[in-house]
Image 1: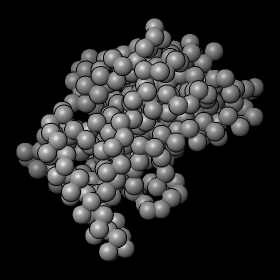
Image 2: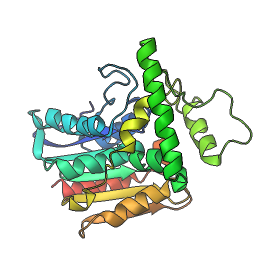
Image 3: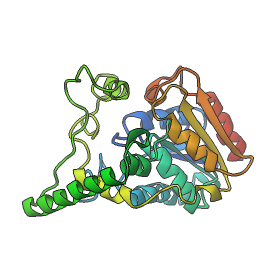
Image 4: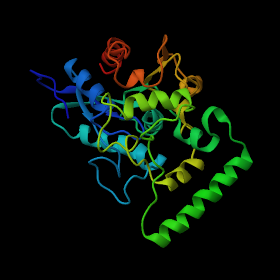
Length: 284
């Protein structure tokens, strides 16, 4: 929780989460702290089953539960005496950008949404990177993951998929090198971060294969700002998600020359002035 200095009265509030596989002490905390310095009450939270949040089994993700995480953060903010319930926004980074849009579609208490370097986790799990998987490849993945469920039940534990490797292969895709430069170095490493260490449990991917989270994003009525690095491997997620949004209060902001993780922590790249102006306009 970050409360602006010298704050008084009821404040505009923003719940922040992401990236997918990160913890609040990484990018989410940076966003929350910076926005608090600009006058917003903010909360950065760990999703269910990760970091310092509760829940068993550990290290499991779910499009439904993780959307609910945003709604639960709004529950909390809505009951604080120092929060104006008509001025609550959310901000999702990376995979939590998609969760933010899903929460925005269901929770009318949210008055403004920002996504930064967004991933659609359902799409990437079902279709692979750059939509490279076909139906047969998806069926093979289902077979592998369901066989893993049997093994997990037999063993009484959940096998982890593994985060980023400790040593990066020379032939690693460039976007993996981008992630490595953040999660496995002093720049962004954290002991509780799944991406920095053992990763999610393998069978988490199953729930994403059957549930497209952006099905109702076209029905979001409040303002949405979609931010992405122009050179990011993931930029197509934001472009396609933005194309589904309706209304004149929606904006796509592409940052020239920026790659995916530039929007995690690069204060010279993250457009905080624009984010602040957006929230001030729409959390009046």
